[in-house]
Amino acid sequence: MTYKSSLQLFFHPSAFRKPSQEASTRANAPIGLTYTGTTQALPTTLRFFLQLLRASLHALPQCTTKVSSLLHFVSSGWSTALAVAESERRLAIEGLTETRIVSDERLSIASLILLPKTKTKVRISFDILAAIGEGLALSESVEVDVCVVYGETLNEKKMKEVLQDNVSGGVDGWESAVREVKAMLQSKSAKVVQR
Image (cartoon, rainbow, N blue to C red; front, side, top):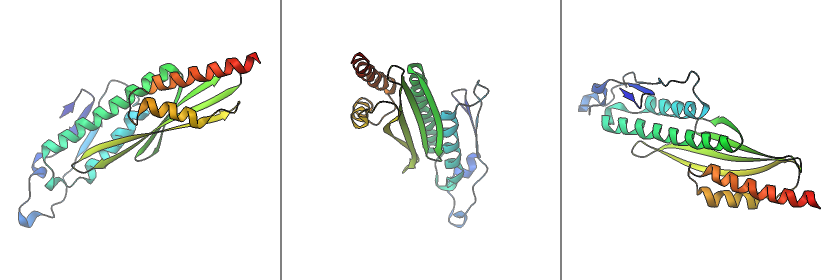
């Protein structure tokens, strides 16, 4: 089966039927999920979610799972991946970004703000924690962190509050939140230089 022209799911439908009493220990059949998109190299964000979905599919007890639940899991999981990738793309328009896979269930997307007038660098991190919950549902939460890498001493706590107010733990609005913090820092930077 193909989903959104970018994923192919291979599975044996008969493995997902309810087993009879004596077949309750039946082993899983082979299952695969591959990326078939147009880009040569899979972006880090999509690779993270693809690995998470694959691992979850391999651990899935097929004999007690409905095919409809399997298909919903793959489609909703990939939709989440695409939403995070779009937020990352918008964030990259605002400035330099760095994306890295921290662990099997944690992805970090950082935006860097450079303030040349005060020789200051600020890192804003959006850490996505993804987990498979009950009912074969992918859940994600976003943690925001701010760190002054070097330069002028700034109020990290205040910047973090501004970001959290704008993002509210979701994957939307990252770029506008970073834009607001950047404008706030540039305004402060201009005052420091004028002294």
